[in-house]
Length: 101
Image (cartoon, rainbow, N blue to C red):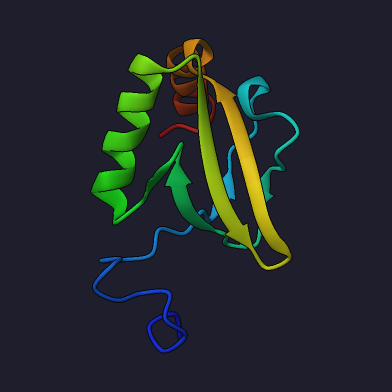
């Protein structure tokens, strides 16, 4: 469906979909659990091309920026998530332990 609607093509290798948000203080206010499968469009001003690209963009943003900005497209329209870079490593460890990842 995304290919035929023009969301996937030469400009985009694959669509990265956010299936759920694992609750933590670092992402409070952005919903938890199933969040409607929004498409992750960009990190900062850079379009996400595929999952490995998203990972590298997030790592780079955590190192270089005070805040990580994720732009997603939800069924109701665009949505921006802002996460404090300094809090992410500790939150990642907490989330992994809590959810046994």
